[in-house]
Amino acid sequence: MAGPCVPTEAARRACLLCLIALAVACAPAARVPAQEGAVRLPPGFRLETFASGLGAPRFMAVSPSGDLLVSVPSRGQIVALPDRDGDGRADRAVVYADGLNRPHGLAFFHGFLYVAETGAVVRFPYRSGDLTGGKPEVVIRDLPSGGGHWTRTLAFGSDGKMYVSVGSSRNVCEERDPRRAAILQFNPDGTGGRIFARGIRNAVGIAFHPQTGELWATDNGRDWLRDDFPPDTILVVKDGAHYGWLGAARGRDHGEGRRPLRLGRPRRDDLSDLPFDPLAPPSPHFPLAHAGFPWHLDSRGESRVPAEGGWPRAETHAHLVG
Image (cartoon, rainbow, N blue to C red; front, side):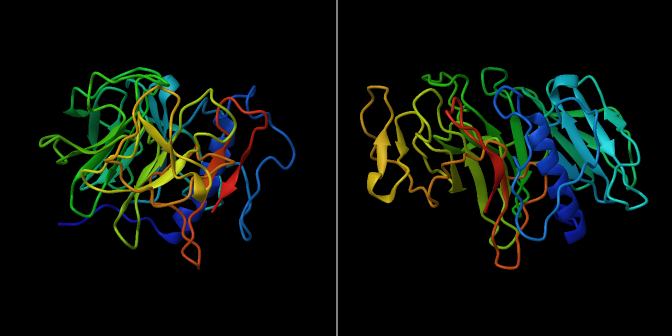
């Protein structure tokens, strides 16, 4: 049985450019004003407009036939952006699906387009070249919905399992539902649901590393403390691990280790190691898998993550980090 679709390198590069443009377009004007030189690109990349007039697009996925699909939560839509003449600009915008409840994460797997809504996961049968979807099948009906972190992102691993990220319901809170601030695992048909990893406040971006098969995630730290603390992090997520939310966060420098958040909670002793240094500044608020494929790996195996500063910040950012 075939695994998840792996786009061509050209498709990945094209989608990375779209990803950067959409990340900048999605940033609220009050936080990241448009300005000359606001986006800094790695060598060999350029920034061009692929499509416009989409409102507030979020995540993207490349179909097996090479078409780009984009979720637009504010409109309840999935929009297809074909570039059949290969000129680097969308030929047109076609509404693939409408009437969805804040659709966010997208993934193609075994003949279906999976869409993560805020409280459910649905899937559309997909045939090569499709630009409009049929009637969706509800795969998961009861994801924790709404709240301050309403986005749901999904990805499929080489194990054939579906992974869904669910953020915390508030900036700082004790969750009544243990499925929040966690990454969940399901079978592709929605059965067998369980908590895969906990203590991840808001993993907006999740993706499987194309070489190691490890699950990576960005984790957005809490707001309203100070610039760069707690920093956002990139995690290599392990089965059964706990990554600190709500009781602790890792400091920015090596010497700080994990520092308790200002919640009056005791230090946890069961925390999993954070495998990477926190990214601060800036924080990866528009993170991994924003385009639905793993992420761009250059010749040195380095990743590229669009980023903006945390909230609130004295100084805002919108550029790439490697």
